[in-house]
Amino acid sequence: MVPVTEPSGPHPAAPSRTLVRRPRRLRQSPALRRLVAETVLGVDDLVAPIFVADGLEAPRPIGALPGVLQHTLGSLVAEVRHLVDLGVPGILLFGLPRPEEKDGRGSAAFRADGIVQRALTAVRDAVGDSVVVMADCCLDEFTDHGHCGVLDPRTGDVDNDATVALYDLVAVSQAAAGADVVAPSGMMDGQVASLRAALDGAGYERTAILAYAAKYATALYGPFREAVDVTIRDGGDRRTYQQDVANRREALLEVGLDVAEGADMVMVKPALISLDVIADVRRTFDVPVAAYHVSGEYAMVRAAAERGWIDGQAVALEQITAIKRAGADMVATYFAAELAEALGG
Ligand code: PBG
Image (cartoon, rainbow, N blue to C red; front, side):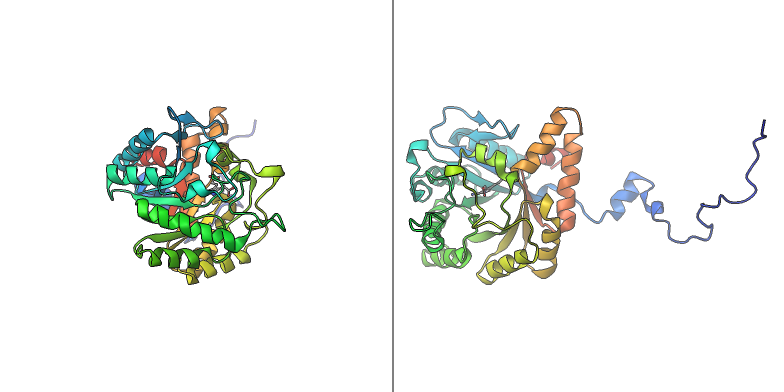
């Protein structure tokens, strides 16, 4: 038997005793880690996307988004009160019209008594200004073909300028109903400048614009389409107006245009496959940057957690923290209520 002896010298691979940089020193206790944390995720960073549907008798679960509901006006108000109690500072509202109201122009999106407009007023009446009420400004939930704008009969593609003219009507009707922020998500060129002029012209100079400035065409929106009952006609997609996932520099062009057109805040979407873009935008512009942890990103975490493969809440915290670390000032996430609770808001 070989006797066990103290090694006579340092292990050849051991760090020298004169090593000065020892990053592990600052990881030794939870308090020390908290003290040196570069990124602190808090309730104030969260925005809760929320769905309201016209003509529902009771709130309806969304299969691909476990824990997320299509709300009635009544359950919407209750949920917003809950979010306010948790300290969540912002909601992002999406509306579903009655199916029979859909048409080629999405006109139910800009009616004074549309579902989004009624919901905005109900929320405003219930919670005042204790939460920032942001309204998605788009047409896809309201068009019978499922595109984010009106179609040009000659090309079959979305007609940019005709669509922007309708977004103006949507934004003004949302501001009139009580939205603090309108969030154009259709990726039409010139939409921010047009909305700003329309809002100002109607006396809504105080209504802010959160521009979905860098929004990519991605399969990660799949569960959302179920949430809002949208199917794009003839198996179509949004690649002629949303960005190609392959492009990074183009995002700075898009954001630069939106900032120049008057965007108060800009959104990068989706979040996890765009961390480089979030970092670029943060470095290049001084407006607040939002990121949207989208439906597919949420659904993947929930699905794996349901199978017991991952700890869903821990992964959610890591993902949303990483999005903030990349440079986002706020994150829209379907985990907002759950994380607000976990963060002790
Ligand atoms: C379009 C819109 C979409 C999302 C937000 N606004 C869908 C799309 O562009 O097809 C997706 C959000 C998500 O996936 O969570 N109005």
